[in-house]
Image 1 (cartoon, rainbow, N blue to C red):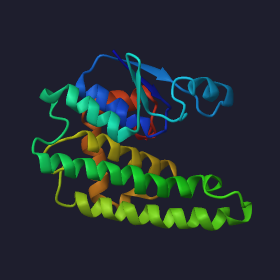
Image 2: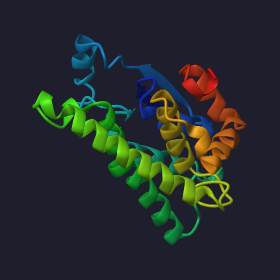
Image 3: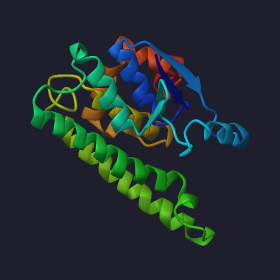
Length: 209
């Protein structure tokens, strides 16, 4: 039994989608990170205090890329990762880029206080983060121009991760209609039963439109 610790509106949605796509046996544990007392209790499970985190027996695994790669490896018949070694590496690299670049830019935009203790710098930090985030959205748009999914013709766990950024951009009131191919990707994602179930369970903005 896999236990997923998640917080609605966070990137843990990607791991949630992966579990549903795999038709895995799992349990969802809501973590209200915005409540300091509950956050401190959660740190007894995951000292990093971050979601997603999955608990398998006595092992706690963190970070979306590691978690989704692990889930895909447990259910190879679901083909949630590409088959070739080079393609697996490319898919992993893309997810690492989402995690280490796109997600950090968005965090800089939305939470500049996490990058400086100088309140007077928050506006410039946020503005810079927003510019970088918008630039990354353009790169995503370009990648999807001639692809149905992140890796081409076949769905992978990377697609569930990418959807998180569309939802975040909407919540940030970014006009997403300017991103034609990314918007079409979002619509394809919404036709997938596992994706829609995860979104509805978390009451995500994408199913509240």
